[in-house]
Structure formats: C-alpha cells, structure tokens
Image (cartoon, rainbow, N blue to C red; front, side, top):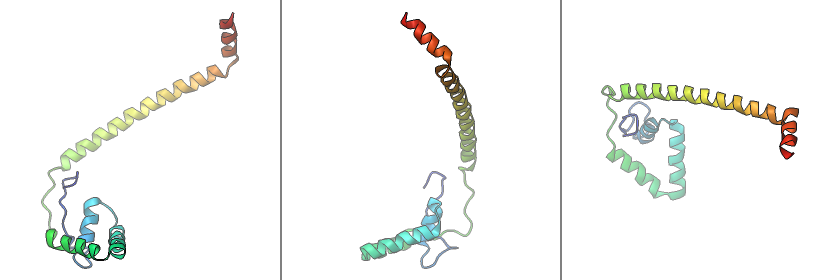
Length: 123
C-alpha cells in the first residue's frame, strides 16, 4: 500500500487491455498516458521483458472492486495536512523575520555609519 492507504489494483474503468497501466497510474497518482508510454518504451527497448511485466501484472493484481471500502486513513491524512499547513505558516513567518533582519543588516553595512564605526575601531 502507498502512503495514502490505497491498494494496487488493475483498473476497471480506464482499462485498455488488462488495466495494469491504469491501475499503476491511479496508485501512484500519475497520468495514465505516462505509465502507458513507459510500458511501451520498456517493451521497445527490452522486448519480452515488457510483455512479461505486463502479464505478471494481469495475473498478480486483483481487479479493482466496483466500490472501494471507506478509507480509514482519511482522517489521519486530513489531520496530517492541517499539521503541514500550520508548519508551513510557521516557516513562512520565520523566513519573513529573517528577511527583515537581513534587510536591516544590509542597510547598516551600506550606510555611512558602518564606515564610521569601522574607522573608529581601527583607532
């Protein structure tokens, strides 16, 4: 299972031949055309290996049920997403404070006051 709790199935609604490419695309949340292109490329460059991989998928993967059971990970995923958003806001605030400090340092270093303080320390 991937991190969202979803199981790998052969797709029943986007299948061309056996539904393996569409099922892999749904599992990894990628476009179906990309997985099909990769499978065709594998077939072109390796010949029988591409066919064997596809046939293994047809025989080893279950057909996707018409109605999937409710996802028990949904609440955990939603709570995790909220935590990520909170951390992103905190990080954004921290970066803004750092940016303000950096701007203040740049203003000081480029000011005549900095040159004066530097000359005064040399004495």
